[in-house]
Length: 129
Image (tube, rainbow, N blue to C red):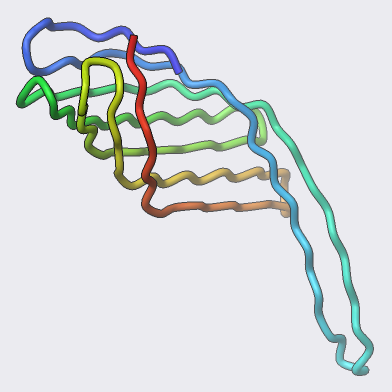
């Protein structure tokens, strides 16, 4: 992700470009009306880029509250993501972070479509330099 942020005080906001890969694997198992089982599997991996905003708020030197949002609609693909959370900097360069992330990917081609959503909390370490 690349973001250009304006302001030098406690609030930093600006445009953001995020690029990555969306890998998806799908396994389907079902039973037909005649009672026979049916199985299928497939996968799709797509390169994706989104455009949006990035926002940081630093209420103290050790605490950072962040949020970013991005989306794109291109040809058959629709991608949207948003994440927000808090970072605590234990030292100048190392800290911990946690928050919530939501992603939605949708591929549409006439009557055919594939919709994938993922969301939930995240926790981890943070490094700044």
